[in-house]
Image 1: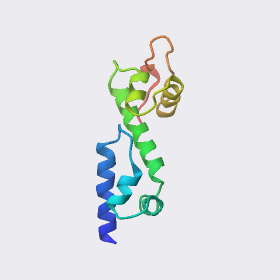
Image 2: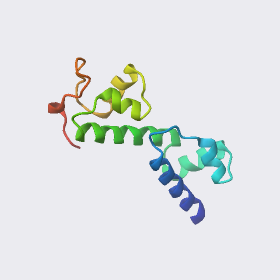
Image 3: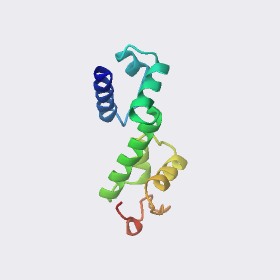
Length: 117
């Protein structure tokens, strides 16, 4: 059991280092000598959420941190970096990660309404 937990931790590290690119679940599952189905079930059991939800939440939280710290970056730029490539996806991203309103003219987040957790 310890080896499985250690391998999941290693996989989470790999996901974190490659979070901005597409993640191949088949390649990750093969590192543990499991099918994709088995890997997804074990990951969800040990981590507490499905791997796709884990990746989505990590991308959203990293995008939120970047948007809150860098005033020069636009929502579209951050969206492209984290895989939200179309404008509707970028707008949805900005709504999901902050309580800020999207300024349509400049494409930047209104910083005055943001508050830390």
